[in-house]
Amino acid sequence: PPPRPPARAAPAARAVPAGRAALDPVADGSAGDADEVATALAAAGFETVQVVGTTASGEVATTVGVGVAVPGGCVFGGVAPDAVTLEAGGPIADGGCLEMPAH
Image (tube, rainbow, N blue to C red; front, top):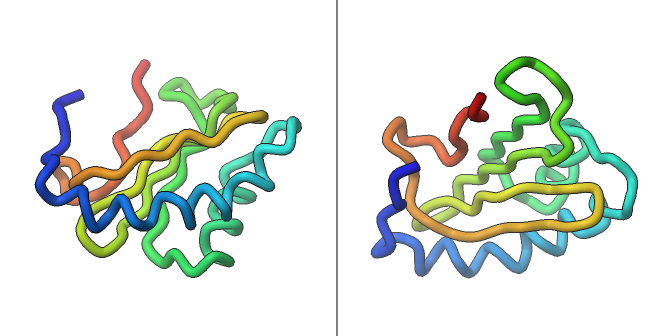
């Protein structure tokens, strides 16, 4: 994927700790699903949330993709059964925060 614009990432980076705090309980060692991830983020006050819980072929993904629009950009990453990976950056070309899953 093309790199995201770094200049707009600084304000968005401030939302990463809150996102991680919301999602850490989901990564409790069991397989989480997209609904659980979206609910956790909404409960933490994030409003524009995108989650992808399936692969391009429609199978359930082991890691739920996460994209959240925040002031100054996006927080994006994934929630695996035992880990949360989040980073901040600018929006992708379509203006959203989450790319579609690859094949």
